[in-house]
Amino acid sequence: MSSQIGSRINSVKADIHQIEIRHQRIPGDVCLLAVSKTKPIADILAAKAAGQSQFGESYVQEAVEKITTLADKELIWHFIGPIQKNKTRLIAEHFDWVHSIDRLVIAERLNAQRPKFLPPIQTCIQVNIDNEASKAGVPIEQVQPLAESLAKLPQLNLRGLMTIPQACNDQDEQRQRFAQLRRQLEQLHQLGLKLDTLSMGMSGDLESAIAEGATIVRIGTSIFGKRTTR
Ligand SMILES: *Cc1c(COP(=O)(O)O)cnc(C)c1O
Image (cartoon, rainbow, N blue to C red; front, side):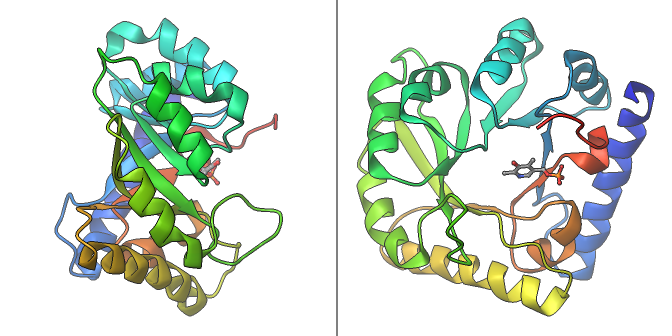
């Protein structure tokens, strides 16, 4: 598998480029986050050899082992999984980005636990766009108050919004959901918050997400292959 990772990275990047052109996005505006959860260090190194520097992880313990092992590689690490209160310290100490903040208590703990010698953590609020009971994220009505509170925390830099919509094959429906997130970001702009990030789009809904303004797309399977565990 490792041997194919480089060519898969290149092919995903080429897809992103084509989609950017098709939807009048500025080429290079969309950042590829390679989701390496459950995958071994060798796979991450294979992706790095193909020029990939941003990696997404969802399980704290596993991620911290990788980050520590690869400390000298100058990689950028994004936490994208559900956050338990007792894991915030490890996240604050090891990650550059956190996409999955969905309540103030988590933000406050990350703010307090971020080591002062590190830059602020780049953060996104995770939005539960379909109001699915089983899914993490705040309902869209609660984004604004949470964003205003987060923006006051000095060790966090609020960058934007993230969502994982319900799986659906209809492009119009996909786009409607992503458009909701884009409009919510625009509303926050009007409040004076300087935000530049929409973390949305995975393998199955990449085109819809980029068409609606995604700036970070999170891709696992198309790069690293199917996950056998978790
Ligand atoms: C696992 C995961 C991804 C990547 O999903 P694939 O289907 O493997 O591309 C993206 N975003 C989040 C939040 C994830 O947990």
